[in-house]
View 1 (cartoon, helix red, strand yellow):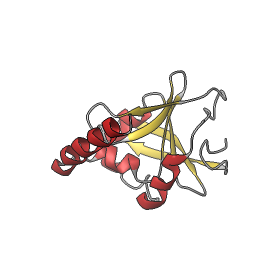
View 2 (cartoon, one colour):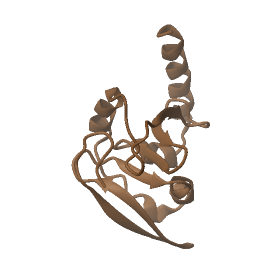
View 3 (tube, one colour):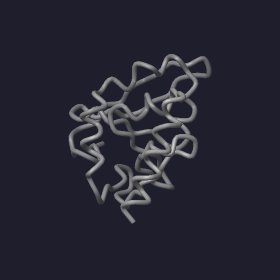
Length: 131
């Protein structure tokens, strides 16, 4: 499978959890992560998944400008979505197959902090100003 952001090859990454094994895909170049439906939520609370997002968040942010991202499974356009709890966190999703998070985004997704509340306010202000 190729990365939906940088088109590099993705490698399967096996994560052992208390509830069994989860296979996600990690880009060899930009270090973005592909999660089949339900996998990100399944791994969110599992400490064994902390190592999965080893990419540089600053590099990951540069990929937020990539538009027209296609699902690596079906090739259909993916939607840009904001996390329901952390509005500043934006990722791409295919309703049928899963979601893609740039480097650093899964770590942010896993670890909600008070600083995230501040970032959500700033993100909301920026979205309103750009309309």
